[in-house]
Length: 79
Image: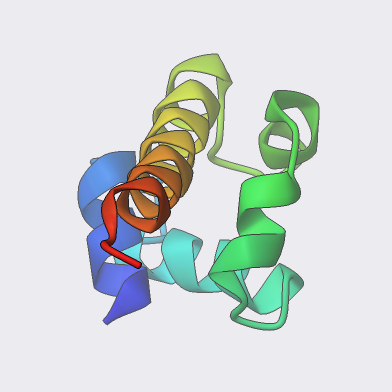
């Protein structure tokens, strides 16, 4: 699931909350829309309890890589 993949990036949760639960909270905040999650800034992500600079940067970097992959696929498709 998207939450499980996001949890792998997050790595660990907090005392009382697993990484999967934290990932579900992040996704719920954007109505489970990865595109909207990709629009979140580092500051936005850090507002969540359990998300610091390192986790926010990891999530943002992964979403940016996904965005770039999608763009490169669009450019490389034969017309």
